[in-house]
Length: 475
Image (cartoon, rainbow, N blue to C red; front, side):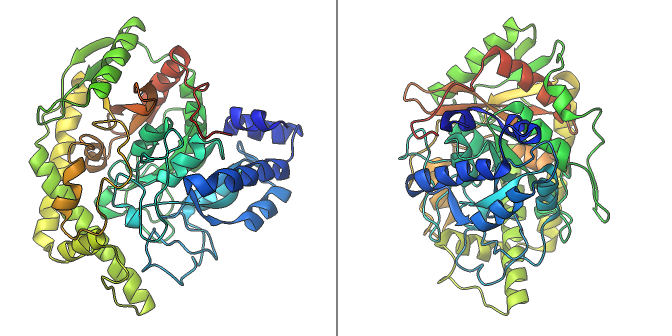
């Protein structure tokens, strides 16, 4: 296999080659390892190297659709037995996972060879991947800019051609934001589409969803086929899919009614590059036969922000305290970043009444979005309010969250909505700025409608292909 051929193929194509005997899984593992060694000093995408584990898996690969395909786990919730999950924090050390998470087990059953873990901000709190423990992950399109967060290490590794797809999760945009920043496909599934076991039932009141970032739509769909579905003991689960998601990618989406927004929900204009991305995509969709209208749901952003921060901060505090209780440690500001410490303290002040009120607010938002999708099949926005920010824009040492996030307050105007309501949404690489930075376009669908998102994504991938667009750091 040539160096170029490895990076040009998606995961399904590589898995098919292994199945046919055209290449060995060990050869693929070596190709990926070579690229980690080549690019990681610049990108800082991979923070834990698991080459021996990956090579051992590649010697006898599991016969799945991604047989022998190199893969990376995220250093948040990417539990692999015997390996630490640090969540990007100095505090979370010395406790290897006792067992694989259910999702890791399902990734393995899909056939992948796990070669490492990827960079994250501390506890996944930021829309950029920068931490005191690991340092910043750098965007292969421009290393002075952010990869997005919190799955930014995964985004950088996939965008640079190190692996074709990698684990990601999303509590406020953390699959879709790195996809947008790195020019990738990133689907946040419906709440509980992928399980969080074997220990957890849900995380942060259902805000968290698990999946991957990938270069092709079909890799995203095929991996969701491999991982979705409830496990015994789940507190709730997503509606059953109508057919395999991989089949949806090549199905005609029909004539859809799609709403679009070029302003945030408080009426503020997005960055001109984001407006351009929406306008050009709207024209493309119209040319494809869809009905396009400017419209937005009636979402009270102040209520969403207050509810989200209550659940997010309380969930952070609960997670830190759970680890502290299990290990006998005491959380301190010496081991937690300033921003994390401030949010931890705020989370400990959230009352049970406030928490329940916040969850009730999420449910009200879910009702509003259901009404909106009774009229519109999809809602189109850009994933972010601007192209990828420069590294260092957020002061992770500032204990005042409002001050720390102030420089990027308009940067993430949409993604948290789908976490609060549980809906699926997908970011697609449909635009690049004049400066050569990716701008993701996001589509949100009604609860349980990943199939619809994959049908449209497949159509757009054919109509405006992105496979040939590569960053400066590539292959």
